[in-house]
Length: 533
Image (tube, rainbow, N blue to C red):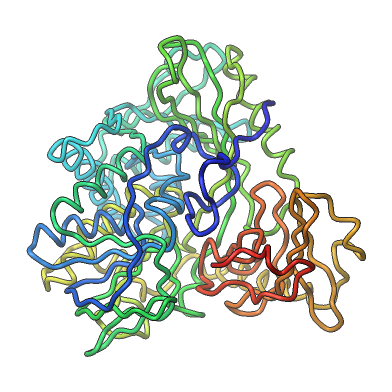
């Protein structure tokens, strides 16, 4: 396997967060990242959107068309979060399966899920066309195929439920040009794929031309709704507004309520060269749990395509066998597509799984009515983000009825998944044992250069990173969200919280919520080298 592609040396990573990990996704390899300024004054607007990913930018696009003044705040660069690390499957064939959605949300709920995700694909296509965004949008078929442990009965159940949900699915004899697969498969026509950063960067530039204010490297530290709604940045500037949309993958304005309904997962992706045209353009995913997901994108020249394969998911912060997971993906892929060549990219992403399979989109529970959230992508982040940010939340802001409101309501009650709900939250409690265990190492000399560890420091623990020159940086290992102990992720060079999925860079700077604060810094051996956040 090839060496991981990391942040290029000419890209300033700290203070200019281009992505939320050390491994670069294929979409950022040669991307021209649009530049926006940092907020440096108090301003007023109609709607403040926190987060410049798929949800935030699509929300801004719809709201500005409705005549509202919109301001977007992003604490890194545009698409630096999970929207830039996705594999960008645009599918109404949902990962959690329609027969499961029928159990949880009823047949009408499953129909609305199919309808809303179909609308999201159409919206992305329409925006790309109307704004002339060259993002490699392409309509393709989607194929659900059997994993080794499932039987055709599984596909028959999904076929029936998807048909009842209004989708024109069909059972087919196999996968196109796949000699290794001879079992039945389920074909979902009229799915789509895009190059996600080309789309988001193009959308951001279009918004700027339409007068939407986008500020990057601007951290929203205080988010308060109500009659005097406002967002205060870590530099002390205030954005006053009438509505606030928190579009940060996981809400950073809530400490408890939503996180008992969400499970954070890490998923792994490889991108490998294959001969041009050797794998048909389509979306593929299997029935395993965790499942594999596959697509094709253009190579750097006309001689090859890039085969993108993901899977090997685990609860965030609760595994350390990163290389094994990448190796498993290579083995799985090579067995099925033996023409696979060099692995040119490998990276991981952050998936927020809702307990009952559908995203939480709408008014933030227990908050003022003018604060809205989009979270719980469930592996379908591009469509969940588009239908939420681009359609549902704008309708709520404008007071327009929307038939999907109750289906995606963040305050909805759990039904059939209560035992899973209890199981996950007991697992969170179990992670608190890290407070009383020893550290990963006893001495800093045991930490290799460009690596990190958690060390015991009396009654607490310290997150320690040693850079490539041997300089040591220390932070508290206590996650600011709810006090769990973080763990070192040597693959993405981050400290990850095993309780609710907060992630911090090697110097303690927050990368992913729910924490909205950095790890508390501690004295370093050479403090003058400590990066500023």
